[in-house]
Image (cartoon, rainbow, N blue to C red; front, top):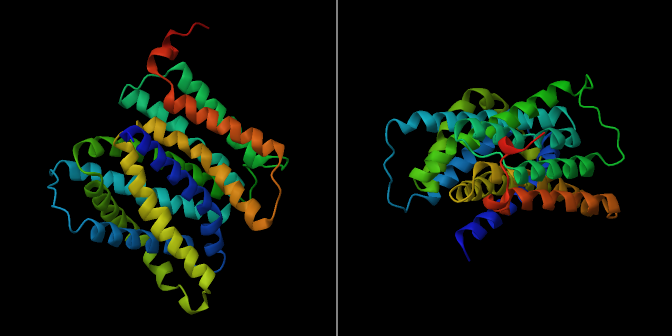
Length: 305
């Protein structure tokens, strides 16, 4: 199996984990752990796991100049990203959060074009458009969704900041992935992220009443710490070693699909044709962005109006 295929499998699994996380994380925050306290637990738990997991490996020396980039990765990819997502998810609906999160690949594509001079090809534009259309169609369905309702506008803003922050992180971490081992990078990024989270999440973490949690909530907390944070981030940085940040971010479109599938199982809903059509759009979009050959893709700059 080639490295490219392994990278796509890894980022596909990340999409599955994140898709389930919408339901699981929101359930935990309903009366058990407040958002920033949850992030404190999530980051410190994952940090310990990353450092323990990498403890047996030969220590890789980080150049002093790269610690500045690591600090910014910790801020954008761990602290700001996660705190804004959980604060937003706690205030808004999962539907709204999912819609706003689909803006991340577009932001990454634009930032990558400016910073790394990635080519805006016709295939990528069409793929992102198809994926966005499918994701929005899937998560909106026949429901009336207003992103600007006063009761949820702050949460929507937080989720958008999260999407923007995550997009910057994908750009910033790419050079580190090319220079160091993935685990070396991620353990330092999470340590930096924890330092940023510490002053904001400590109080809410100390307020958690652990004796009120049943087995179900404890399992959900463990899922968020181990799978959503440790496994997902590990697979994500592994994928970035091979794939471009634009390709990695495009897999965000499969998250609503998995979130909906989980909701169907948990709520005993039936699969509808609109959901099947939306899934077809999502995977078609991911295919165009991820697998289209450059020689068959025409640069946007050369497209005639």
